[in-house]
Image (cartoon, rainbow, N blue to C red):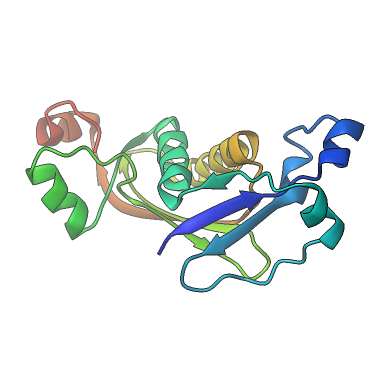
Length: 170
């Protein structure tokens, strides 16, 4: 599934005001290649502008993964079989452990699988991941997050994690 995000702007609207991160969610519309949700578009906007900004699902997933790795006590991400095979051939997959879905109202649902540090309070990690992901996606893309689902795949000590990964983040 490909997640494309298209931001349409009218030329006269751009002249009237400066776009900010706070304005961006009003202008964002998501579409998938399989099912494109209906998006209301003002015909005047189409006549005046053909500008667009598009994000691939990989970009959204990468932002989410990088934001998640910033959270204390998140030791790594847990991917699926495809990620494992890619890593065996030397490929680094920064979006491992992340998937993104689009809701009917053009918002994003984020699914994240992580490995956390033994002894850390999981509900606090969840709240921090949710806040960080929501903030980073809004700041970088203007997209609104409808929900964050965090799955704790494993709990290990930092020493066990280092020994298992050789110091590299999963």
